Image (cartoon, rainbow over all chains, first blue to last red; front, top):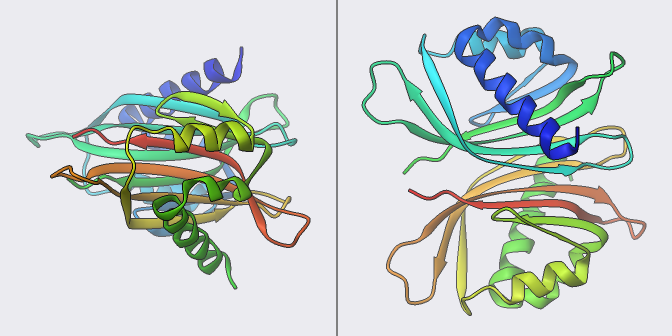
Length: 123
Length: 123
């Protein structure tokens, strides 16, 4: 798969997992992984998933608008930049968001998330 | 300066240069630098600045809403994630945008932009 295909496959996997079973996102992060969520800095797979599973909504659905990807340097990483809409159950209007991921190759031949920055784009 | 201060100083420098003298942004990129601008992929300092200086507006003003920053790995790089508003001269409404930069240390002791991804957040 080329980088664009890898990044699109990652994005589809990430958000379908988020929308169906947030706790399973733990597999995508490692101990050194970082999340900045609306300005709040969190480190480590366990802490990141604790944050994501404690968000004040139960059901949600991400709809992706754009996915951009670039190689991040000689370590074989990829930067993935996403924009989309987040629909919360019971809410009339979707929220627009932007999110970036820095993926690095894992020893298992897959990728893990080293960096994750999430922002809502308030209208 | 700590990473948050470095990233904020970079962001202020980048957008004030963009708004006053776009051609001078060439100094921030190198030959291997990548820009993805609204999905269009461009590589190299000269090509990137040619794109930025050919955008179909003369005067603009960026207003920054948020700046998030994380270290990108052992090479000493930094990821900088920006959201803000772009006001074009003569337009009534500002455009919302998101942009991410991957900064790497340069031999001169400063940073250069390896990765740059820009998206407008259409309402």
